[in-house]
Length: 70
Image 1 (cartoon, rainbow, N blue to C red):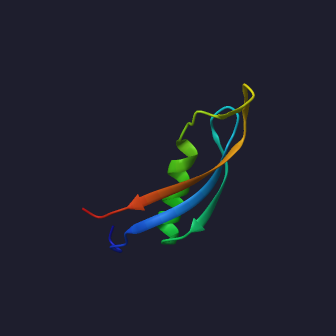
Image 2: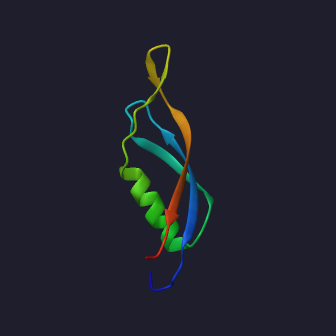
């Protein structure tokens, strides 16, 4: 917040069959510290896994994380 940076960090992440997040890639960087915050937050998320013929499978998702100052 001291740097007065705001904007969007774009990520690509693999959602594993158990709904947890596997590998994550920053596809649009905003600031190193905000990128690290976005990665840390995403690692804590739990998703409903993708299903293929009734079986949970890994899936690639795109995530847009916005940082705004209020």
